[in-house]
Amino acid sequence: MQSLSATVEIKPIFADADPMGVVWHGNYFRYFETAREALFEKIGYGYAQMHESGFIWPVVQSTVKFIAPVYVGQKIRVTAILDEYENRIRINYEIHDAAANARLTRAQTTQIAVNKTTRETLFVTPQILQEKISAFLK
Picture (tube, rainbow, N blue to C red):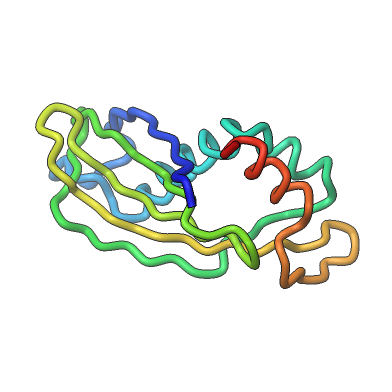
């Protein structure tokens, strides 16, 4: 599969950190979300379009490997890479120091499609997302 990815640059603020200036681990998920949103916007299936198409996409699993800390004021690049989309959405993430290009974090999330009205879980990715991805990868 051809790679589909999006990268955003973020500079953590004081409110993201503990008293030592180290970004609190829970805030990494906001950074992943920012990159994931950029990824879906890139193919024309952002959150507004997901909602309009009748599906919600809850995260059902996540893993994170913290390699080195992120600090307040440190510019980072967060990349979201689509890994799987046929039966679920699996996205890999990497956080790099923007200046040194050193990898700081690796992560992965898995999302499933849920019918917004019936709240039924779909075990196959809806056609709308498959079409958006296929059109982008052509």
